Image (cartoon, rainbow, N blue to C red; front, side, top):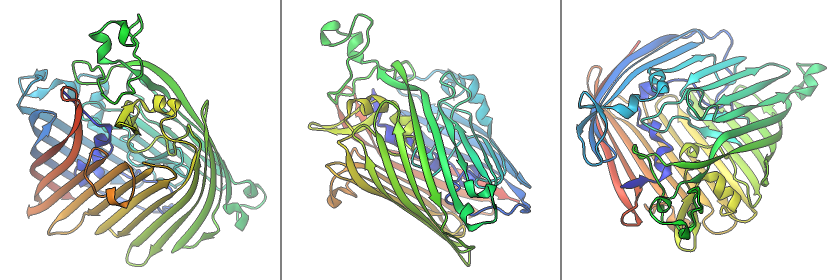
Length: 493
């Protein structure tokens, strides 16, 4: 049996068709204010049929999708089905001999039919989003940034974001899973106040804001059950109750249930408090500049300091550029943007470097054990450039003191060409030196998706992923090429 390295889940939503990506869930940092009188009316109908692999099984994937936008409302509906064409060992539990039962064995799975419901836009007076949370932010992204709550194909979680913004201040909230036993999951929010607005809300000083954040995962995995505890007596470190000794040797022999899910032996709460200041020194139609200062404390652990500036350029011909740069001080037991794009995988297995190579354990336990590194200084940079809906490119770079403290994410998107549409993502974590940046190994992931229009509303789509899985029998990571291809239809009105 193989166990996927958690990073392969962090961007699975990029494999979804552009129709399924259309809901507005971007950060208030990355979008301009939406005019209050903006009137929207439109929608799309579509569907996809394709072959691919889920684990060891050859699968026929069928998905019908529709969405509709009216005024400030948006709604997306889908019917995703995974039909097993060739069922390899271990055998799947199937309905009617073809339909994966695990896709629909929880009450929350049926909620994925209503993919999202939205009112308003991020940064507007009122913003409500229920369903998929994609690229979710709170504040400056120092606690929650680029967060995605539904990375697993056979589990759906109903998330919720509700924001209110006024001239006097506002509130941002997030709840990652309101529909399963681990509710509310990642939950909390930020309140900000513009103190000078109480004297003169039109004053330039009203660009100054003070924020307070409180966000946590109230049922975070803390200990996983070690497969050794089921096979060998207590001499190997299991106590009489079968609790594991933390698996620090890098062998990855974690126990799994019949559906391949990691078995959590113990949960524990993690809560994070943040205080921030910001001042929008320039707020023009084509340019805004916002310096900010965040100090974040993981309760019971260490704190981090984030000193940054956010620059937004909105140029003619629908050209946009967002640049964000931060200086960071990170305590020994502190991780920046704790709830990030990879969190839902990393909360179970967080990879880190040891003298013997990579190892992994629950993110909260890794934080407690201090394996994330010594106290360190470093820098964070984020860049996003777009030309309307024709071309988008982005990148995130992190570099801190010490070995194996560099991270890189690169994305490119060409969504609107009539000849070809292309999506790609490259992810690299815990590497050392420029020579390792583009070395495909067990610290990296490559994903590419290609869409070629065939005729009218018909198109051909193919997706490729280069990823690593841990083979428990061989005791090592090995490269796996994952792919899918098929046809689809899309009609926009």
